[in-house]
Length: 99
Image (cartoon, rainbow, N blue to C red):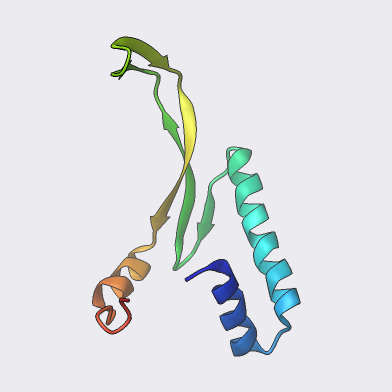
């Protein structure tokens, strides 16, 4: 499902204009991104958590040149689904929806 399809579905279910739904969805993603860039985690009860994970400094190999490179410590975005969300996906009827 794409963002456009999500916007269309929300619009049809709520009766809100697509333009307004698009602005809301874009604002939601912007808040999530800005919070995570600032180092904050975002928790959405019943859905999941958008968390910033720290990756430690490590030595890796460039196999094409056979040299060691240092990858500095850095942060990566991550999503951890809520237990209820995971259970719904596990028990859902995916066979009829898989393309």
